[in-house]
Length: 147
Image (cartoon, rainbow, N blue to C red; front, side):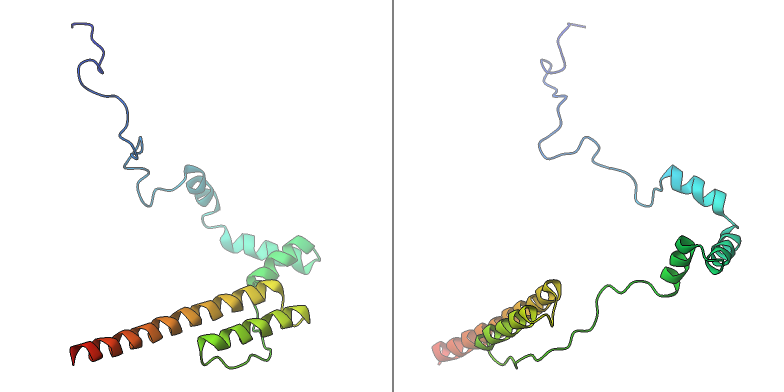
């Protein structure tokens, strides 16, 4: 051995830029050992545990009652929203609709988060409308130039 380091011998021990030290990563489907151990402990006990939670809930245990009710009827992520929405026929109409959404928030008819979701829908509609309009204009121009 000449005593040269691997760098001096022309080999780099560093990783290539942008490459992880473990490019393969954790194999897909690999499960956490704690999860596996807990599943083994609970295996076959689901029915008994569920019945115990129901018994506790019926006896007035509030946390157990909450668990049972969350299973029966999980909390709603959102709700249907009804309010007067002007028709949207052009991209220009979207400004009127946005104004109506803002007014509904100010009047307390909509929450700001509901208005945000509706605004996303309006933006998506405007983009789709503008894309369709541009496509139509481009097709007309192509027909005019090909004549």
